[in-house]
Image (cartoon, rainbow, N blue to C red; front, side, top):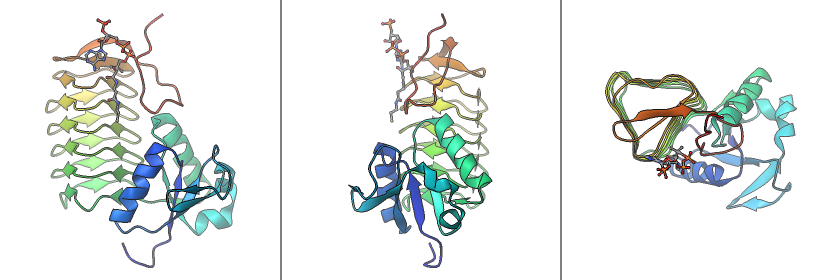
Length: 228
Ligand SMILES: CC(C)(COP(=O)(O)OP(=O)(O)OC[C@H]1O[C@@H](n2cnc3c(N)ncnc32)[C@H](O)[C@@H]1OP(=O)(O)O)[C@@H](O)C(=O)NCCC(=O)NCCS
């Protein structure tokens, strides 16, 4: 990262915020501090200060003097806040751990983080505000839409398509050319060998649908919401 880039503010000082703080240190991305609605102004979180609440995202001068990464695990909340930042004239930063291997032909959107030990193969495309946890691999020509959450140890084959705000749990494997629907949840350890429709919970090996997945806008790790 060039020394002339604006410092980054991490929006959300919870566990994911602290993880991204570590990533930024390794990636030599300057971090100015956190914004958080639940931690008092001036509190130190690791080596950084809470600079205020999310109200500061309405301050144009502040917005334009910084870049932002929304470090909230919940896919819906992350996207809503990132959209607000951009609508108010702010810009999102991308953070990729230096130990990742990224094809030069791959594309990674603004606001996305790759936490570490990730491989992103040829012509893969990752959208905005995606959260890619450690040791996840993204196959060649795969497409990940905005605000997806890919948990540690997930392996996506080539030409997998993960639609907006889907969540793929720890260690899941998605076979090539499979589509994971919008807002769907894939359970930990699943082996997905056929398309998962939108808003569907799928789990097991082979993964089967267990009903409708309904994500709230709070939980960092979505749990299944059983059909009433
Ligand atoms: C799939 C998942 C969303 C289901 O959550 P849930 O609805 O709260 O499920 P429950 O714990 O009530 O379990 C319901 C049933 O599904 C089974 N089950 C739960 N998760 C499962 C999984 N990943 N694979 C296979 N079976 C699973 C349970 O054993 C239980 O079976 P039973 O009814 O025969 O006893 C959740 O278990 C999961 O895998 N979450 C992903 C967690 C994750 O990866 N977090 C990331 C941390 S970085």
